[in-house]
Image (cartoon, rainbow over all chains, first blue to last red; front, side, top):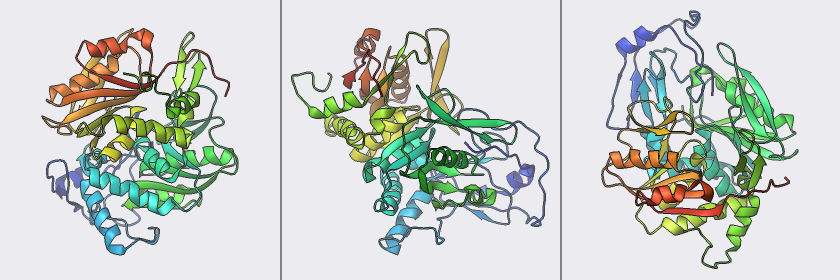
Length: 258
Length: 192
């Protein structure tokens, strides 16, 4: 998963944020923090980088007002009808839960597990991706371990594509190719099976969330190394402040919520 | 019950079985690893896998599919989506954010732990546990315990593959739980 960056303004955020927590769902999250000059530089990180095994840097940099909101820019697919898209995205957005101070203090973790508890919203999530990709001759859906395994296979099944798991080291049996990528401190690796994909295939890369884009970038590299065309990356959630979108080597990114 | 064992010449099961791959000596010497990733590369066989599970359980009023990290995350969600159930991930320690309950279970050497979110499953929910494979049944029993601790009713357990020699089925039966699998483990390394 993407690298963990500790932004040392956590005290400010925690003092000033309020959010509505309604059982497992947050209806909206509004962070009110003093506005920072745009040239503000980060303090050097004070703690270790990503823990292994699924923790990820899902945090907000301070801004004057942060809303978890439906993504509404030109990278949305042409809707079947605008109202239908908006309704579904509103429900998906409200089904996502934010957990403060996970995995570390100051980090606001975007938790998709509550989305999975809402069968309508989960189905809508998959449908939105399928509607976008079903006529694009995608033959491979590559999902990044582990939450990419939840969203990738239903998309693959619906569009008749292969599902290819991209995994942490030493999980896939047999011959693999690896791609190393940088974390804040040190590196991590993802792996793909040799022979899973063929040169010339058209692929999507799926994960639940894009933060800095490091993991997705590594996934794109793995596929391109074997001659696959990565058509697009697709995530449920984007953290735009972390600029992952710019790190995808020019590959387009499609998200539902940012 | 294994799908296809009653003389049912289900072509779908044959296709699924032939799409699986055996990788010898993984993760360590002597182990014949049953690899489902090749099944996922065969869209028809993967769809048939999900369809067989859905057909088996769709009239059971299942409200929760609990999938065991990580390969249970591949098979569980499509089943959940098809039958309109919640999907609940059961994870290794410290992966789930927020409040969790944990269940420890014994390995050959040492122990491990499975976690579930507090509040994900309610008393009275009817649950199905899903994983790619059942070996000794230790992990699946931990999953059952987690669900029963919050007073869900565990209707059954579904896996693509069973390793009969390791007696997971018997272990589940001793807890009164049904196991549904599609194929048994294979011994010969496949040439793929």
